[in-house]
Amino acid sequence: MHLSPDLMPSMPSSESTEYQPEELIPEQKASISCLAFWPDGSRLIAVVGSGLQIWNVKEKTREGEAIRGGFFTNFTTVSVSTDGRKFATGGTYRDGGQVLLWDTNSRRIEHTFDKPAMSHCLCVVHSSSDTRLLAYAVEREYMSDSLEVRNVADGSCVCVLEPRKGNTRCTRFSPDDTRLAACGVCIQIWDLATTRPSLEIKHRAHSLEWTKDGSHVIANNLACGQLMMYDARTGAQVRSWRDRAPGITAPHLWPCICMSVSPDGHFLASVRGNMVYVWELENAREVARYSFPRDMFCVAYSPNGDFIASGPFICRAPKERDTLVRRSRRASTAHAHLSVRCRR
Image (cartoon, rainbow, N blue to C red; front, side, top):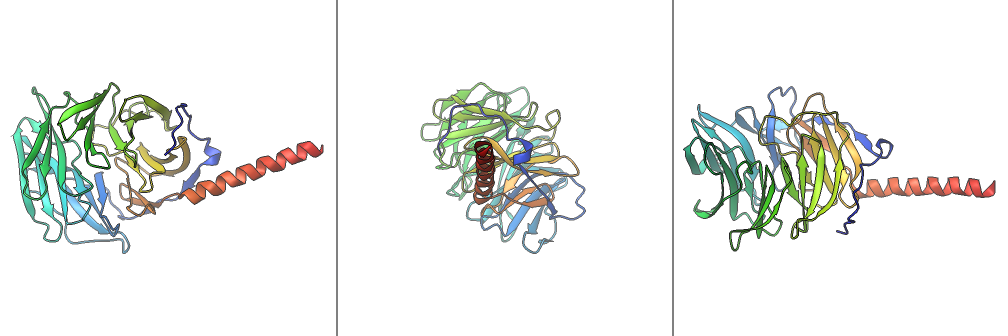
């Protein structure tokens, strides 16, 4: 991806397409804090209230009963392995945190990772692209936070990292699984081969994503509606841009998976309030937006890039050819106006 170092404003609204979202989960009133597609895009799993629910995307039907973790368990995040055989959940259990690793077919718990009292697994659980590893962060009261990487096959601990206090809002493996990023009070990146921090970017962020080639990280600060792109090796800021949603405070519902990069790496979907925006990453131009009847807390691209899911809604995603058509039309219009002026 060619990235210009210029700071680019968002695209004028006249050049953005507003798509009509379709309700995938009819009459769903409970808040959805996190959702994830299966690798083939056929199913979608979501944290609904304190439980989990799986939907068939094509048929738009629920698959089985809601999954409950127990009377004292509240799920907060979910991540599906890239082979679709397992999914992981983070949440709270009694007075401590709990991460569970599930078998997809049986819906039974394979491994349980309980944390000490006064801890909360409120950050994102995230699976590596090769399905071997699972990362999650633990936020402790009056103690230092920790970021753990586990082996999915046997649940063994691969390494324990030490993020800065309050830096456990989002956790993401790099596309090649060699690095791990976390954000909160700042952005930190670790080299997993050495388990040492390789980069620290002193900007607050609530959610982050990697570009497809792993060369950059994208951070989202919900409080001010600012999106930032950084070089993942040097920490230099490549660009920064803002959405145009009215001012809102950062949500108290943590985590907030408020960004998703398209599978082809060309677009970024971001959510703020009751709006989802889609940006071209090469130039930070807004190409589409979706308006919802209430605030959304999560967004996810489908594996084939055809759809964007947010809360109980699913929307048709813009394609690169759509933006190329709009560019061609604008160029043709500009050329026509120039020809008229020349003839005059």
